[in-house]
Amino acid sequence: MKPTGHIHSTETLGTVDGPGIRLIIFTQGCPLRCLYCHNPDCREIETGRVVTVAELMTEVRKYRSYMRASGGGVTVSGGEPLMQPHFVTEIFHQCHELGIHTALDTSGYCELPVAKPVIDAADLVLLDIKSFDPETYFKITQVPLEPTLDFARYLNEIHKPTWIRFVLVPGLTDHLPHIQKMADFVITLNNVERLEVLPFHKMGEYKWQEMGYPYELSNTQPPTPELIQNVLQIFRDRGINALAG
Image (cartoon, rainbow, N blue to C red):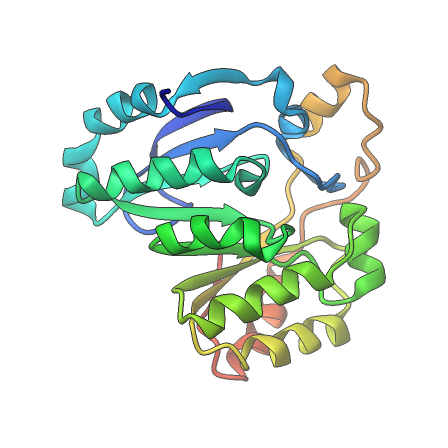
């Protein structure tokens, strides 16, 4: 049988989800309910488009020259890719047969035995840590924080190259003592190549409105340049390679 999965869409010539120029595959299905999610239409697996890995690889081959010239590759994002582990693992294996770099963009909210084959097949993991405060994390996602921290510790244990991603939301994730605790955690991880501070935006708000979901952050503004720099400095003061996304 040809491996199949459910995807939302693909994005060509992406430049922000891993190194170089990349093809981004957005999988369908996510166990989190993030308040600022820009892809709320990815929540349910069943509403996605069913595709085979072979069909996706046909698209991947079209962009091999861009990927090779830029040091790019394929990133599987979502939704949450770890909800379809066999599908994503096969994508990565077939990319490697073509010499294409692979990246997994994940919340890390998954049982480790399920996630390990996908992690092993990924060249790079982009790990989203929404907050280091358990109460804030739950408020944002409706799931507990600890599985994501366990996931991060495992990535460190196996020396998997990792980029940490943190969305800075005024009034929600900008409490500096919580950010300091996150920085103290990240410096214990020897596999983290960089940490990206991503400013909150509302580009997905229209999707919430179209789908009839209440969007609680309608009155929240993006962080100021001063706040972004203050947060970056917290990480940099600890020797972390922190960048604004």
